Image (cartoon, rainbow, N blue to C red; front, side):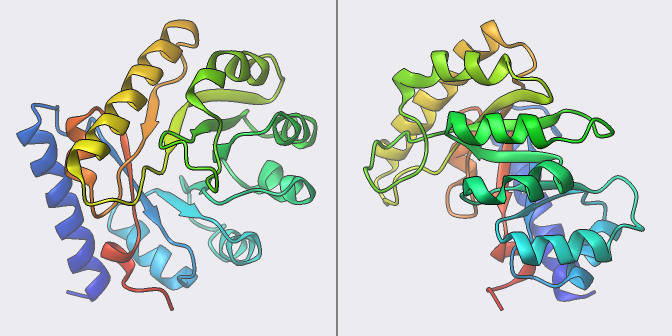
Length: 228
């Protein structure tokens, strides 16, 4: 068994155990394999193990991989990095999801640039749940108005929320932030029923994130190894 296959199996097992211990149904939490900086061959290997959703945050690297793997059916590409307004067309034309939406200008450009031949671009609104000034994301109190603006734009579909919590070993602080995210997501879903995704949790905190209601976790190094 290859390193990627072994790692992938271990991550899937960890996901299943986390769901079981939290009383969640198996399969209720999806895995986004964060393939940034990794070659197309690794992505294809992971694809043949059953993985379909992959996260990228470097546009040129991602574009090369998307082109190289165009022969694979059912691949789902998620852009998970910060997006500059002059780079929106690449995401609009080549990705299925944007997980880091936090500016109206970006939303409007994506809406205008999304080809009619493609399904609506799925977007997650990034929340700065820890309220750290250096972090991307909108503040929680801005969510209702921002979501309404995005939902009014053609060619975009609001699919939920994403966060990167505070970098801390204090579990009580992380739990509070994850719980606040879940409350925000529940509120959002009452207005936007397509918002079925709450993306939070990475390798260091996926069990806690799942316990607090995450529907998607983002795992990179634990599958593909350290950055090349």
